[in-house]
Each structure stands twice: as C-alpha cells, then as structure tokens.
Image 1 (tube, helix red, strand yellow):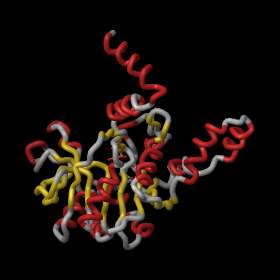
Image 2 (cartoon, helix red, strand yellow):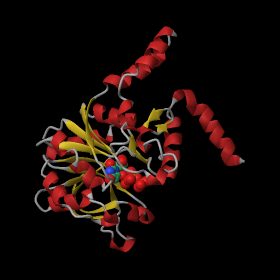
Image 3 (cartoon, rainbow, N blue to C red):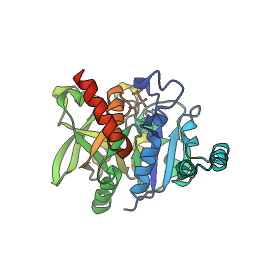
Image 4 (cartoon, rainbow, N blue to C red):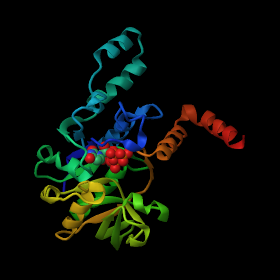
Length: 288
Ligand code: UTP
C-alpha cells in the first residue's frame, strides 16, 4: 500500500495540561523552542508524507497559523538583516500541504478521526496524535509505514509499559509475527491491570485503511463515554490482519505534566548549544 495522507488530531480539550491549555491548544506548547505540532509535522514529512489533514476544534484553529506565512514578522526580520531567524520562520510556511476538518465536540479519538473521512477519501492514511512525540534514529511513523507497505495491512505503534501504567492506554493481545512485530488478536481500552492481555500499549501513531471509517461511524461510545478508535480497530481485526510495530526510539507524552518536563530535558540535552550547561544545571539541582 502507498500512504499519501496523514490525519493529525488536535481537537481534544487537553484537560491534563490546564491551565496551560485554557487558551493555547496544547499542540502548540513548545518543546524547548519548537511547538509540538511542528515536531510531528516534521516527523510526517521525514516519513515521506507531505499531505496533512488537521482535525481541529472550530474555536481553536491557531494550531494551523503556525504553518502560515507571517508577513509583518518576516519583513521586520528582513529589515533587521536577521536572515538566520527569517529562515527559521519561513521554513514552516512550506513544510507540508494542509487540509482542515472540524470536530465540533470532543467526543473521542475515534470520532476525531471520523471527521477526516471526506478529506482522506478511499485510500490508506496515517493517524498522528501530536501529544506523543518520538525521538530516534528513524521516524516512528516511517517504521510503521515500512511494515504497512510490506504486509499491505494496517499497523499501530506499540510500546511496553510498566504494569502501573496499563490503565492509561489501549492494551493489545498479540501473536509473534517477526522481530519487534506482532499480529494483533485483541485489544482493550484502558483496562484494569488484572484484565490486561499484555504490557504492550498502543502509542499515538497508526497506519489505517479506509474500511475503518464505516466502523467508526457505527461506533457507540465506549470507555469514558468517548467514541474509541480502539473499538473500531478491534472490529477491523475481525475482518483483516492488523499488525503492531514495537518502534525503536524514545517516546514522550506531552499531554501529561511529567512527560512534558521529560521532553524539555530530553530534547534540551540533544541541542549542542544547550547540552553542557543544561547537564551542569541538572547536576547542581540534583545535588542540592
Ligand atoms: P487525549 O487522550 O490526550 O485527550 O487525546 P485530550 O482531550 O487531548 O486531553 P486530556 O486527556 O483532556 O488531557 C489524544 C489526542 O487526540 C486528540 C487530542 O487533541 C490529542 O491530540 N483528540 C482527542 C481529539 O482531537 N478529539 C477528541 O475528542 C479527543
């Protein structure tokens, strides 16, 4: 299969990050100096997908402004001969081609994906949750696309989690299918620890086929009263093979306060101009 489009869902309420997310959608909160949404768009483009459907809440569309030109800022930087900054600002203007879909009420991830149906059409597509960001030698989405192309089947990103973390995630039952590869035989959204079929949790990257849309449209509210993508995936797995890829790399949960802090430190330590001073600062803080 050839995947040309990615759906980025950014219409949630972000209650775990209040009050930061009261006015500013959590997707434009920065990691060091880069909004989370730019990090995931760069991952998508680096994975070979240049067309993005952004699912937004109608009142909170500022997420897309980040990818529009900013004429006043650009001419000011030009006048001041700040070509270095001009390049940084202009880079985002042509990063990808964007389409918009609206989710009028945050009725769940499955419902958000369904709003992109028309923009996606009848072809396979990727789904990106921008509060999950990844760092690794190869983009997480690219790792999934490689499997999807090889198997000609939908794929989800998987990561092993600590037992105590299990109730936060969609957890899968699996059969081995290769190195870091699993065939999905079942899944359950946010299970109690004793009910979990494994410690493999679904993370925020998917490669899906358009036959998921009718299943989402039929979907009834599940865990938390939301229309869950996991329930539609479960129904899809009864009709065709579905795979899970244990990606290589580190994942940060930006929707969570601790994950947000970890991302600042993790990405900060990767910046040559910051790393030494940040490391020294962390040592001082830890020893005091
Ligand atoms: P989360 O599960 O983090 O939910 O969504 P949330 O509402 O954003 O945040 P909390 O739990 O209240 O803090 C994962 C991704 O799915 C999108 C979110 O924007 C986020 O990127 N989402 C979720 C939607 O677009 N619509 C929804 O109805 C739910």
